[in-house]
Image (cartoon, rainbow, N blue to C red; front, side, top):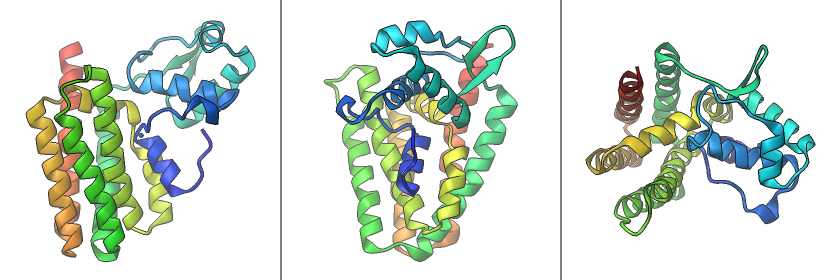
Length: 242
């Protein structure tokens, strides 16, 4: 997971939804969408400086929209300003990851509980579509690793967004837009083995089934465990980098 138009857009941004078509963007929105995708997908690494002139040249825009995009990314928490360095991609340590994932697990677990009490057949159908596309993306052998992860990430976003939408809780959706860290989600999906991806989609299916059958407690518990498995992958990566 730029401008947020409703709960769906907030959740899409949180989960690192793909960049908007160039025809739909101009100026700051183009710069924002492009640089955000570079951060989410790891092209710009934590601690790396954002050099406005270089970004502007690559995107063929002036520095003014790039400066505005950097401001928007800072508001999203993806960029920080450091003394004598300027804007850099923010870094997260082990404690940051633990705090973020615990918050997200509690909030999204609650969203799943609410969804189990409030979901309509259309909500369940939307979850099913995301699960189906997640499974199809896993099986794609004709794509390179990055493109395949993008497809998996988009399907993952749709599953979680449909569950959050089914909670019918606008404020909760807003809180989750801050609690879900898109670069971490993308990193976990990229590092998962095929077996782990299959397990992730099995959790999606189990959560979907408890929502459809109206079992709030089980839905919340399953979502909490599902998110903790992603956290464990991120922590393993941090340990490997130390």
